Image (cartoon, rainbow, N blue to C red):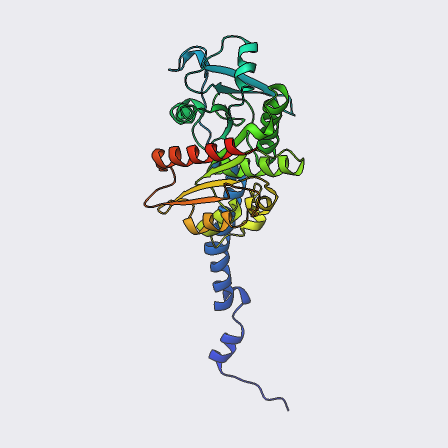
Length: 323
């Protein structure tokens, strides 16, 4: 005969539905209060990441002749990108030089003087950088600066692939349209622009026409590294579309590198930048070598103009001595 349990309490415990058990309630709470919010944040971050990465500052009109620089010293530049949009920038001649015709501009650019192609960070526009551009021109340098697509008065939407192709178009404008020898071009990149400059220098080096030098300020190993450091609990490798892996391109750069980084940089730790400078290949033929400067107390946008002036003059002196 089968023994039965007539204890009402025991029978009641056995008869509790699965959906009322503590395990089920715990699992349900985890899903509702942890997984769903986490998944929502990941989804929002993923869908809006380019809005966060490229906080573009737009402007209706950025005319060269409406700046504070003298007429003849600043000129409009344009080019048509691979997808057909027209992008705008400026050419600023070295201080003390001016030109009023295309022939005169060409003569200035091919006088043997060095020209800087300036790649800005991910905020602002060229109008807000006029003082910095003018400061470079005071070092006896011509300066070319284009806003990224979606910035300033430029149409389009920024992405890594688009910005890199646009940067290569700027390189082509300088070397082909303006006939500036690659050996007379310096690439200057700040923050995100440093990654643009590195990839451009690497591509030019692969083609056997490296720039005279690469100058970097407050830039990073990779965007992936940056985001992982800020958001360690997110699957960054799966989320990020634009990775900006400077660490993968540095070894291909075949020119001297001058790099500045503040020890109090609030966005890119100096240790990460120090890791980047070590990836550029040493070349015995670089008389100048690679120069690394930790700016004591310097923040992300706080590199000493005097230090920049001194090091630029030193770099230019060495470049002018090369045969």
